[in-house]
Image 1 (cartoon, rainbow, N blue to C red):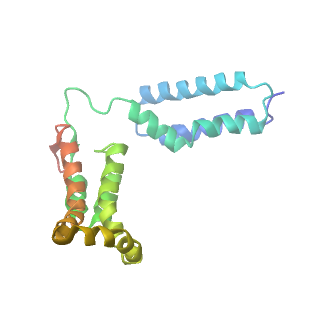
Image 2 (image 1 turned 45 degrees about the horizontal axis):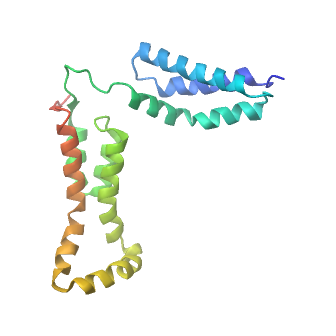
Length: 189
């Protein structure tokens, strides 16, 4: 038995995926869409009774079209071998503000296409640790965790506290190093 809404469900999913892949190379986009379509067809062939629910379960296993598009884009080559990555004020602002105003800097890093998802997550976690520790709402929890550690360190406690304060700087340095390894060239355009 075919799912009564199979065509609408599959084509709707593929249309949303195509929208998410909008900025990619047209040939690559067509190839990726065909790969996903083939995967859906293969999964549909493996189910014994095709219902709307079974078809939706297949698409749920694939994931949200935005997440699928991000994953497919990460598999694609990021940079042509002979070209450099160009970055501009957004990336410069992300690096500078990650140290001085961590939430704004990390937001700018997430908006940039110069870093991949893993690099953005690492930078967010590094700086986020200091941000959470300094947030007044988490003071009692941080105090309960760090209190015994600071007491045990004695004279070395200021070094620990100072190190925590440099975590946003470490986050900015990490982003700069990752960008520099790609041979990025600064461009205002």
